[in-house]
Length: 409
Image 1: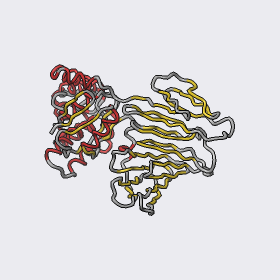
Image 2: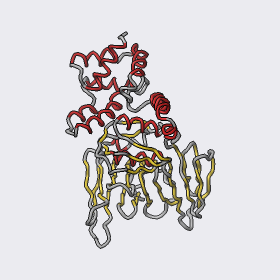
Image 3: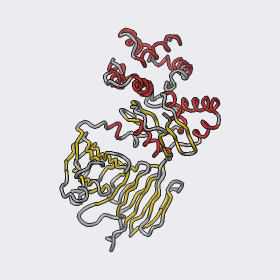
Image 4: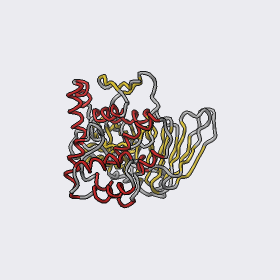
């Protein structure tokens, strides 16, 4: 079993990429061993003040290091930093987030709560107020065809409503629509809305699975009839579309974009306050069409293959056009659904938009938006104070006023 001082030396060196080849080989083959788990945890706890994102050993940690052992090379996150020229101050701020990704997929709950207690003792009520802002959770509001609204957050399993012969059932936090008992005389529409701080899963009448991110909504018929399945969406959602070649699946993104599929897995990010609309394909094939602006008749259309992402600039002065990214970062796209933040290459503004939606807060900038970029990942199940502590350690200063987060110069 290695000594505490040796483990601390190797951990620091691995994070900072200062180990020699021989030392790094020792770290990857000797330090990361099962018999060192308890010692590692103790060392990590003692390093919290200097390296706040350094987390104790848990089951999420070991696979990360095992991957490094197999590759026997620096973490891809570290490579992205060393190969990407940035301003020195930005590099420091990015590096602290990189440490989170290298040492652990995300900050552990135990680590964050330890930091909250420490910070609360130092800063008093401000830190305590931040700790009171919990992370988002499962929940949504269902608006029925007659305008009645049903809050799904706290309802028990069972029948929620009957819409034109289709039963709406809630089961373990997931809403599903059974097929109508007969062809309805009229088509009724329901709308599911997730406020800030909520996300929810929905099974449409055709069996299509939908995961709705926070601050989003989807409008859909309670049963599919005719020659197509057409829905409307605002915000972000991930779809696993049931195949039906005789009834194509079409998704309207406001008046900005149309997506057509036969059966596929894809993610749509289309918030009104984002500069770019994004459709990312994981499986199958989709056709993305940019809707023309007023006084324009031209349309831009592209067909995606798995791994590609279509982007539409909402601020384009002329008719909208579709650009294609051939090698999309699928892990980053799907991070929200998989329960973590992925800040890889994200600007401070992009990070803050995610925090606004997940923690139901408003972010304002006291003196412009600082030009800061980040890398790394974090779980989404920690209170806002956990994020604020890490931002502070990264020299991003903030002030919390109720549910308003002020970013300071």
